[in-house]
Length: 164
Image (cartoon, rainbow, N blue to C red; front, side):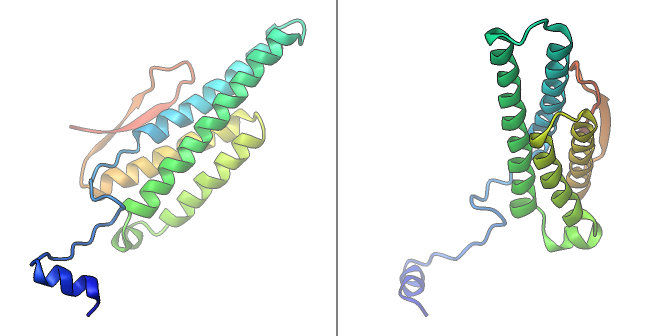
């Protein structure tokens, strides 16, 4: 027994294990989906700016680069949120029930990288759909019914939400 183990024994403290860094139990794929919608919106704004701006002056460049920056930040948020679910929430029994889970998270990571490399709207829409699939699996593992609802954003699309 280690010194710490002996010390804990003397204090009658039991060791506890949690599936995450802090056993909060609070997980929700909503932020990941909002970030994916934001990526789509930034790509739309970038394309609109290209079409409608007559010159590529300082104002154009400033606005364009701000859209790029937000797109990149939100692609990284998607990655971050997917990693949290993958690393802290999902357990081996979830992988047995959803054998494509590993590949789905891997695809989300790859799609985020691809989104950051360009402005292809189809790639961003694929990313959104992948986040929705991950959200569906997440809520199903909690035994909660889900529904798809129309997003109230110009980017369109849907959210996967729990039916509460």
